[in-house]
Length: 338
Image (tube, rainbow, N blue to C red; front, side, top):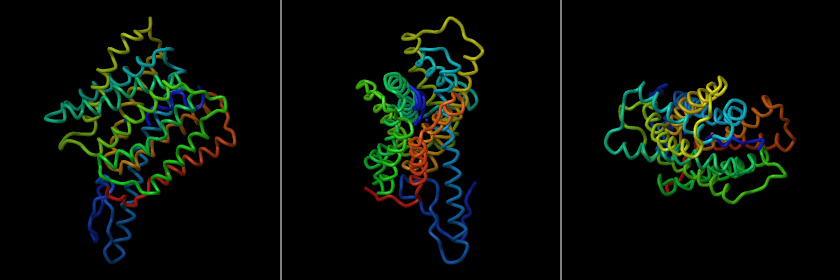
């Protein structure tokens, strides 16, 4: 869940085909094939290959949320203070323009408006709401709200993808919310209604983006980097005038500032979102949504290692629950059609 770790803890190989028939996963028409074994030992090999491929896609996709979990430490240690919207704009627009220059591909047909919708959902609207919520809520409250994304994805999946979530998915979603709450909430946490509404809206927009990305797929012949560049550019063009009007530029940029913006733009945005979008493309939407829980986990561990924070027994329990929720949410069981 992209970047909800901003304040967490402290304040977007071909499989063999012999001896089995490939059947698209009922859940969101996932391109990862579910093997329907035929007789013979080759069927077992194929099923294991399919499971291994899915695990590989999940591991790569999880790099995105894990990278977002370092945003809080990067922001506090390297970036100018009190300019969250500028940070969002400088994350999205330069990365998008670089990807456009590298891929030299623009949208065509209905992908002009589809890329605009996804770019606003993932970046243009998501980032401002995210930062507003993060700056008006304790990090634990913000992360706990964002942890409901798997449940929101399951809900949108009923209407958009015509897929009913399994009981396993719903249970994993509830376990994930509880685990994140134990991991990042503090007894002194206070709530701000505007912050809650902003964070819940941001999480809802990202969940909708996941489902729409799954529904629309990728244009034929267009690389994943090009699709990512379209969305980042749209989001950056929306964010830039807002950031310049509301916050402006600092008097000067230090070497640390440049390093921080470069890391967030290239690693934390261009690379992270390309891997995240690949996960959406290759995995069931409900499965990939659970990978977002890596965000508060990494944010907590970053605070532990870099900022010298400590873990309580309850936080350790929350960490175990979150990891269990992610594993439970990767079930290859087929979902029911709505």
